[in-house]
Image (tube, rainbow, N blue to C red; front, top):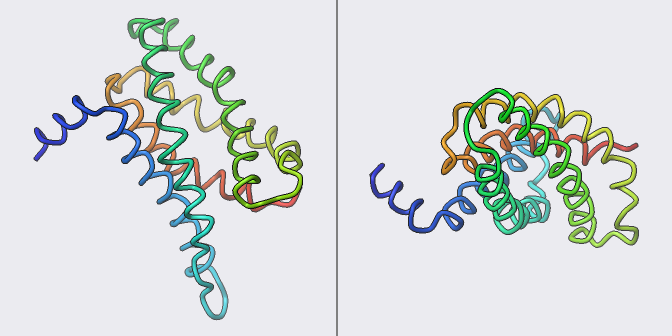
Amino acid sequence: MFSAVKTMFSRHPLICNSVVYGILYTGAEFSQQTVTRKIMRKGEPVPYDTGAIARYGVLGVGFYPAIYYYWYRWLDKAFRGRAATTIIKKMFLDQFLLTPPLLVAFYISMSLMEGKENIIEECKRKVMPTFKTSCMFWLPAQALNFMVVPPAARVVYVGSCALVWVNILCWFKRQDY
């Protein structure tokens, strides 16, 4: 079975990465809702917000994996090896060049899919606190990624980290500031 999965990933890396990343990304929203709507709720549990889960699914399958796939291919070609300076360059490029536009895209695309009238208002309020938190989460996660994870597994690794990260994003999304 492992051999079949490995063959699929080598033949169709973008599709396989998109499916796995999408499941993990959407699963994070599902788990967030399970905790807030079912486990921690006093009184009757509230039904799942399937619209929100679907919105995370759209981003998790159709947007982020393709960007990450091509980004990590480029990053690994541009900065070869696992020397400390190479890893630091990759980490900082990932965090300070790629992450800000991805956070902006997250908030704006969510606002679009939610049908909000002002699609940038939430982004303006939340992107900086989210970015600061992302530095604390993603810099160590990406250090591990670039030191240990083979290039072919980077998107799946980031998807696994995203299972935790999206729970943090969901929390920011639900805040009123």
